[in-house]
Length: 445
Ligand code: ATP
Ligand code: MG
Image (cartoon, rainbow, N blue to C red):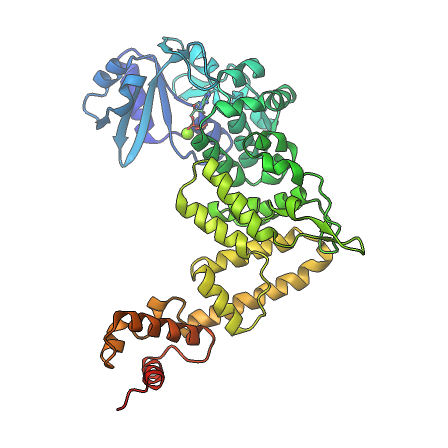
């Protein structure tokens, strides 16, 4: 197994002082799978003070030392060195009462969540794989170390970690682990909202998100019960062949792996159950669902303590996801002006994913339409079209120079010009814009 030289150096230094030390956890898992680890963690029998002493000359960031972690910075990379430990009793489904430092690697590995994450390696002793991690990786299985019920009760966050690894790696939770995930999902209510959102986002970004959202919808319902009425709700509409939840899940899987886009795809149809009506001919409709979905996304993201920027972007995208802009420059410009020039390509991405999750017979026509909107958008950008008052080729000073000094009037003037530019009645050229102002206020030359 190839380790970065910094990791080798740290392990050698600890070993030369008589301690044992290994690369451990995610980096071992990733290397075995042939992937590049995002970071390298090291575990050791040395107590934190002993680690500090052994690494005396290295650049030490002591932050986590109270928790038994020494962080070293080498060549702009941080390496966490953690003393072997066992966790004490868990009282709140998340945090151990106390951690105890131990001198045995095996005990340290036994507290880790899954077999694939409970392996350690160094060059002198090779791979330490007490719990069958390699075999589980080969079989694509996520298996708790020890009794799943006990492990999920200790720390319920592990439920979402299991689904995150499953979504990212395409591994299946082993039967008992899977059963226990369903059994104990309610314990997630004891986990902080921030951690829930962070894990859900990571699950959404996985390649296998479709399977996870379909097979473990009960887990997501714990924090987002709004999902429940979507499951199995047939749409009775020629545009759709899937129930609302299946359609949603397929839209999530079809969209690029961008945080805001995946969240927008997840929430884009949440208002459908409440807006469902059936007409005389038996066809289903969902009038007003985008607006309601946007409000629901806001409520849920607030519950999950999301930052405001994410909330606002997700809401704007959802609100406009079903607007059928005529494919003409004037209307495209209006849409772009409304949602913002940076967000518009994301709106098209959401519309594409939404279309791809609908009746396959209707997809080519819908994609063609969306591509047309994209084309017009790009042409407008190319032409330097203004998509905010600020982007106009004139500013307040230019208007002032025409003799209009009242600040309110200047503001009105700019807004008027902007409306004309968006509607294509004026080009965004300085002379033209100023001429229009003169005409409007009948300023004599
Ligand atoms: P990633 O590639 O996402 O960083 P990782 O496996 O390295 O995956 P980390 O959160 O960095 O995940 O944790 C490092 C290691 O610590 C894990 O591999 C696992 O051995 C252990 N671990 C992390 N969180 C838990 C937990 N909640 N319960 C038990 N062990 C855990
Ligand atoms: Mg890690």
